[in-house]
Image 1 (cartoon, rainbow, N blue to C red):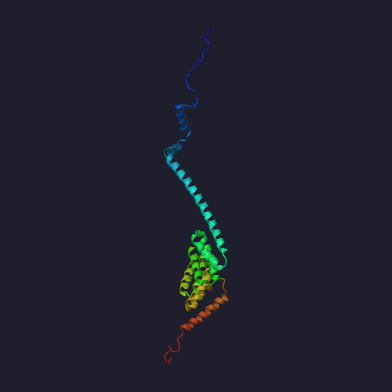
Image 2 (tube, rainbow, N blue to C red):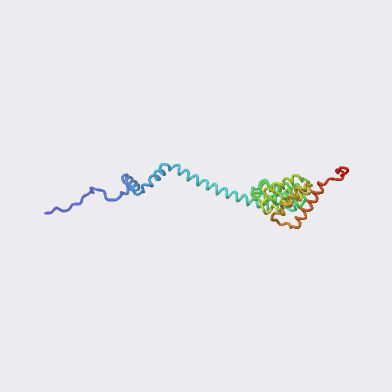
Length: 253
């Protein structure tokens, strides 16, 4: 008679797959992960494992820098908005004298981006009032602080104009000569014209003549007839200037 089948109370071998719990399960899971990772990825995984703390610190640092940057931009934008509001209030202070006083009071504390604009407002009113010293001072500030090359040339011309009003011809001449070396193509003819006019006023006819001749050869918005007349007039002045007087002529000549 056949013996009845008796089930075993304990399996002699572990089922296929990975156990879900226990120390042995953890070891087998780690081994399975390693088996699944491509061989070429192993060095990178090892590097990440060995430098986990350093990598974490770097990530935290990047996040902190981003947060600080966002905070700075927010603060800067609010500072600019507050500065613009202060300028708007100053411009409503009353007459030109009051506006200039109000602007001068707030300018030192304005953000750098707003100062040039405030200087321009002072210049407009200073010239209206005929205060050429103040206008020259603020044109100089614009010239030295603006990052726009075109506006820098315009500021230099405004500065020179007010220096001439103050009878500071030599300083104006030096400034115009400096502008001629740095002005862009669009504004260079105007700078050259101011140089030619000033040189003639100072009696330097040769310099004035050469500048007008340079203008004749370049593209500009001045009339050819006007430039030709200036060249002719200055040539005559130079001739008269170099012609010996009757006292210099020796007797018998």
